[in-house]
Structure formats: structure tokens, C-alpha cells
Image (cartoon, rainbow, N blue to C red; front, side, top):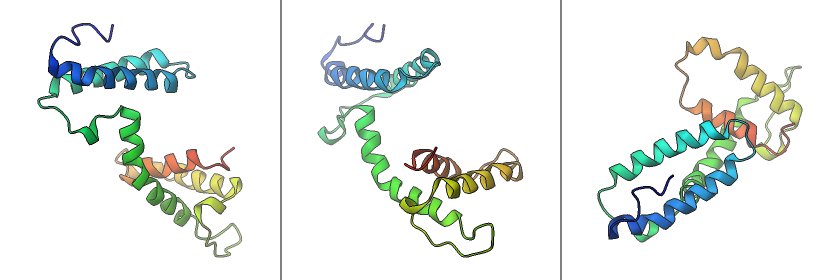
Length: 146
């Protein structure tokens, strides 16, 4: 289905293999989820928009699958995301100052951070700050998250 009307000219052939690799990687990542069909539909819509907006050949450094590009982009953000979460917990329940690095946070401390974020979401009135998704992702990816 994804290959319909594809691979007809030199321009599209230069992207075709990369797009198929992106599809395979996405399918491997989305397969464990129950709503994978909906995720696939959204991915195909996004990819179709990307294909239709292509006007020039990408340089060799950008001819990578979506997951490779995301990993390259996310590498620089990950450290900042981890520092952000480490700074969200300043004191414990007894008022003692906490100065820990991200990797040293316990599951209890991660729970306190996420609970404190969750009960304050209504304050944003659905206009959440741009750091919030990054903070949630860092909480989700932490090795001590239960």
C-alpha cells in the first residue's frame, strides 16, 4: 500500500529505500501496541505529506531513516531533558534539600516528581509549557521507573 505510485522516477527512487527502512523500523516499534493500526495510519499520513513536500534531493548526511534522524536529533536533547528532571525535585517530604543527578533518582523520587507535575496540570489551562513533554519523556525513560 505504501509503495503505490512510488519508485517511478529518479527523484523518488533516491528516497524509496530510505522510506521503506523507515516503515520497517516504525512497524517494529509500533507492533507491541494495541492501537498500532491507528499509529500506522497517522505515520502514513505524515509520511505522505513529507513525500509530497519534497522538492530537492537531501544531502547524503540526511539520507537516513526517521529513527536514525530522530536518534541523532534526540542525542543533544536527552542530556538537557535529564538535567531538567533532576532539578524538579528540590526537597523531600521532610524539607531536606535534595541535590541528585538524574541517574541517581530512585523510583520513589520519580513518583514524587510525576505526582507533583500531575496535580498542577490544571494550572496551565491546557496551554502547557514546552518543557513539559520533555520532562514526561525523561520520567518515562528513566531506568528506575516502575
